[in-house]
Image 1 (cartoon, rainbow, N blue to C red):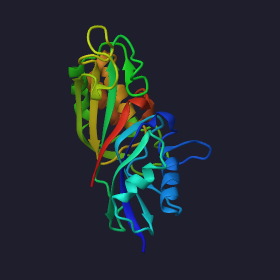
Image 2: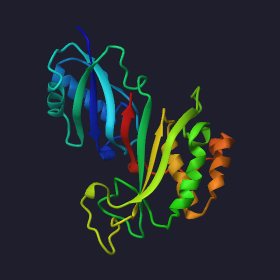
Image 3: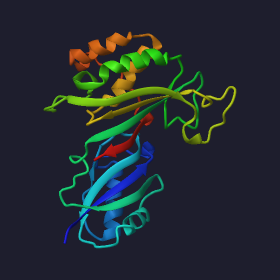
Image 4: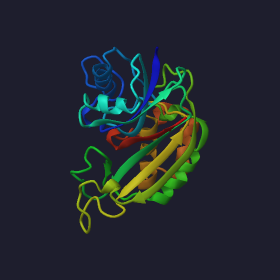
Length: 263
């Protein structure tokens, strides 16, 4: 009898060409499928809530796959993790109805884009935050971000929209705040430290779904606003143009984190 398994996983995307399987490239989905197949002894196909970019990370990716094995559900994380590299970890598993689909059953996704806004880079965050050395006006960024909340056509913020039937998305939250070193990761603090107090800017965004490159493009235009290269109302102009040629710079993927998926 087929069983539908939902997995919750975290991963450091530094060493992967994104989520989706590709021939001759190492991807998170490819490595995870191999680990599941070794654990359950069957060929499997994993379905993800979100297929994020090369170099991006996840604290709360959700996937599902189907199998004939009938283990206690608590066995799945342990069995699969035995076959995974240390930069991917399955931290929970659930039996779900057969019609559960990690992508199409999802109601919203939450991402964070992390900027290290410091005069000096950090060796500890070179793969985990977008380094930007010029002063950013966070109040102006917040003002510009307000134009993106709600239901809009985000064509100007999509890097691959040619074959997409629908480029309308609903952003329910877009907040920006300063913070200190996230999670206390490794770096020294105090005077002169690039990752000391309030040197990080976090862009937190929730939407029903996202277009390819959308979040990194939003980060791009908000950085432009914060630097003074654009006015906050220019965000509205670019959005309403519905034209990628007017779109902003796409910022690096290593500052992007999939935080949570809601069902």
